[in-house]
Image (cartoon, rainbow, N blue to C red; front, side, top):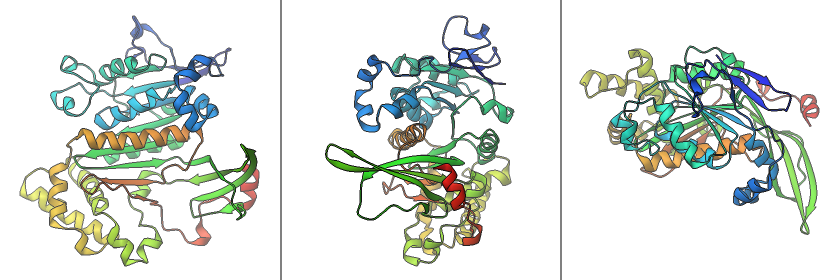
Length: 406
């Protein structure tokens, strides 16, 4: 159980069960409070010097938001370790790692934060120790019990939640809890040369900074999920800069998993031919989990046959050309399931961390909403997977609501 409490000095603390939370200090298990946010609201000169390069990239305001942000990372395998490394080095305020598994020899293949001396220890605590060495300014906590039994209130103290390399049923449960707690949610997984990232930010406002164009920026809907709330112009170094505030609307992973491809793809055979069969493969893998109690296909003939049938069905449901679901892809994907390759997790973890940083800082266009990564083709297309709504059923707010947000 975790609850959020605001202290008189403006700092925020999270109350955890003292038996399962560690902050890396002596006697941590005896504490019933773990401070997760710095009390200082303004960034110090020392921090400005330390984070100078990234501040030049996304600005002091975004860095100040980042340094008081509290992120929860569920399940820390190779992909999560890469993402954690990047957000810790970026200067996040606090990171809590939730993982009840013990470190095994298999973890040492791609999870670079672990070593042989960590085998047999809790994976969250071992990872937390390594992360503290990367940036002592960041508060790193370990939650060592199974998170699946926690209610939505558990997620309330966190500004953002990331869950990786978990069954779809677990991802859907955490996603649902985050929606109840109104917390942004990311999911991801790596399977050898393949992987995916998913974002459900519920409703997210962000600012795009660009040179002012001769074409006026209009307030209103840009797509079925994105709208322009307002625009502001100002002069900088002799240039006219435009700051455009936008709003993105998201769907949970349970709906994204059953949603069709965007209509512009379904209406174009050329675009359908470009959609990687990985989407069908992932949906087949998740359906296989549902039908077998969470298992993944083994080398058994019956399981391979079942997976092949499911992949063919999912491919057809997506209206993808039959010839793109090749036997070569099926064989490669089956061989890669549950494998971890450091180069792939480094790429996916870097993309995930950068999107998290952008969201916490309120800058740039976030992931919308499903990224597929194929390491063999070195491609990572992004698809907006939402229920097939008509123009009358748009999920975006009305013009009146947009004016209220501006």
